[in-house]
Length: 190
Image (tube, rainbow, N blue to C red):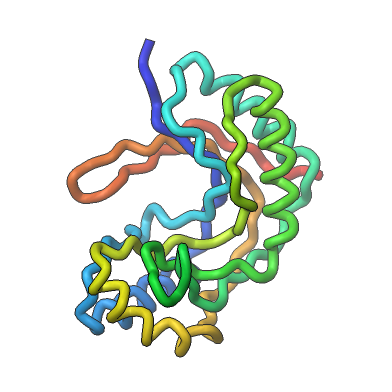
C-alpha cells in the first residue's frame, strides 16, 4: 500500500495565472529570495490532506463529488496582495480571493464535514482563508525587503475566472518544486 501527499483545490484560469506571473516578476525585481509558485500549478487550495493511503483516494473523491453537487459554478476574482503570517513579516505571499470567497468557504465546509466523518482529515485550528499562493519567502531579510512593497499592492487586480470543478490533487515534492497531478475531478452541479 502506497502513500500519496494530497490536497483538494480549484484551478485558476489563464488570465489569473498570467497576471500572477507578471506580479511575481515585479516582486522578484526587489532582489528578495522567494520560491515562486509555478504558473502551471497555480490553484486555490481548499483542504490540505497530507499523506493518505492509496485506498483512501477513492472515498475522498466521492466525498468531494458529493460536496461539489451542492454548489453551482461561480466567478472567482483574485485581487490584492497579502502575506502570512503578516505583511510586516511575510513568509507566504498570496493574492486575495474577493469574488468567489463565499462559495469557496461553503465548499470547504461541506468537504471538511464529509472527510471528518470518514476520518480522513484533521480539522485545522485556523479559519479557512481562500487565497492564491504566489511564493514562499526564503529568509527573514527577504521578508523585510518585500514588506515595504506589499502595501503598494493592495489594489492589484489578479483577474477573473470561472470555477466549475473541484479537484483532488497529488503533490510530489521535487527539487525544482512540487509537481501536481489530478487524481479526481468533481463538477459543480448545484
